[in-house]
Amino acid sequence: MTSPHEELVFAPLGGVGEIGMNLSVYGVGSPRKKAWLAVDLGVAFAGDDLPGIDLIMPDIRFLVEERRNLVGLVLTHAHEDHYGALIDLWPRLKVPLYATPFTAALLEAKRLAEPGAPEIPVIIVPLGGRISLPPFDIEFVSVAHSIPESNALIIRTPLGAVLHTGDWKLDPAPLVGVPTDEAKLRALGDAGCLAVIGDSTNAVREGRSPSESDVAKSLAELIAKAPGRVAVTTFASNVARMRAVAFAARACGREVVLVGRAMERIAQVARETGYFDGVQEFRGTDTYGYLPPDKVVALCTGSQGEPRAALSRIAKDEHPDVTLARGDRVIFSSRTIPGNEKAVGAVINGLVTQGIEVITDRTHLVHVSGHPRRAELQDMYSWVRPQIAVPVHGEALHLAEHAALARKVGVPQVVTCRNGDLVRLAPGTPAVIDEVPEGRLYKDGRLLVEADARTVADRRRLAFVGLVSVALALDARGTLAADPSVELIGIPEADAEGEKFEAIAYDAVLDTVENLPKGRRRDPEAIGESVKRAVRATIAERWGKKPICIVQVIVV
Ligand SMILES: [Zn+2]
Ligand SMILES: [Zn+2]
Image 1 (cartoon, rainbow, N blue to C red):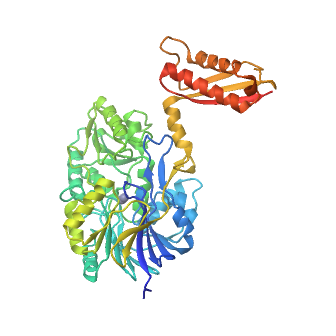
Image 2: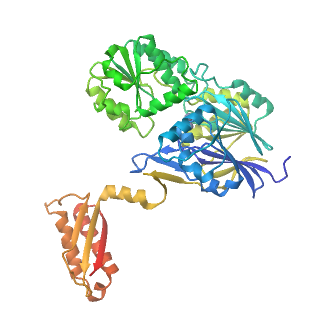
Image 3: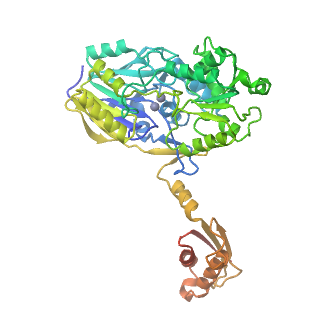
């Protein structure tokens, strides 16, 4: 029974307007007090614009404040953009965590590989299982994707049922796991679905995505016809692709050597959970050198050009065991994630320069996305027939295209929202009614820092303009007690006339101190300020850029 003031709300805390960092919350209750359910807790990968930062995580202030009303956290699947922030952030919540067996096993493997990672108890839900977390009832729906055990969630509440699609596609032959559970989605549509909160990643692409089986065929051909060694790189979590490579290798009498720790970890988990049943044992990298070129396939990490991953090291001839030579073939069974183009390009160019043949998805069907294209989205909407569609999991363009498509197929209400928007789904007309605190955290070394802290902005400035550090020793009357010390970092040697910037800075410091009025000389702070201004202005005049300047004044 619902009281007249009860409402059902949805709020994305990450993943809307961006690819990555997925975190969704659902709430049921009065406008003042609600029970909350969280879905996924992912990371985004930082680009060159965030020097020194590897990962971005959602700011979970809101969930921490509401921790007592948070009934649980459910994971849809084990991609980093859906579960990558758990090890860092779950300890702040300590809520019951639910996942299917493969996701739980991969989390455990990842945790064990990370020194000092906290214990994270997971309540394992069988495939297609159902859990009751009042006022929510959650049913898992198996969907095809690019990792085993991706799940959509039917979240039933006293105010209606929501389909949270997670990451999905339609693939009649996904190679591992079962195809998307169409029957369950149709049944949801028949029973009545209030809202779909859905994946927008490929809403800009017409038609349907090819099947994993089509990719497997293409890989089998490319591996069979290769004249020398073959290296295949793919996302380490794509177990279906690894299976495809294993079968292709076996069919032409080649051994598979796994290269890269992430590959080894996923292979171990896939064996434990049954997803490698029927797949031959792989060989260690130490055997690679003994195998004839036409008897080996190296399955490598590094499809995104990561400098420390296997393929980059192989391309630079820095791998201790695995080498490639002229006439060998490298297959990128992957897509370059936006932001990684330069890194991937460098690896490809490195290989091509050595006479190694490189095959990518530009010319061959060696990769398919795990997300639904427009015809697949249309199918899903025709089965589920929701009252409301809320596009998520995408950048602005993907969200807008998904929204337009939902309208076109006749969904009565389409709500577009942003991270931090509180969307009321029921009762009444759906709308953004409020905001909840959201933001980003950066993983900086071992620490999590607020995105708006000055650290990264300072780092970026340092990278552009360098630093002048000045130390002054003054006596009590404000006279220099020793020569000032001036140090420059990241500033050109000399100006256009050949005068050294170190000398220019030094002269500016002396000039300023000597010409200070008596009154100001006894105020170390005022001296520091004047010196800083003079140094920056003098250098800027000759360089055209203003460096950062730090002045330390010590009174002796
Ligand atoms: Zn995914
Ligand atoms: Zn995703």
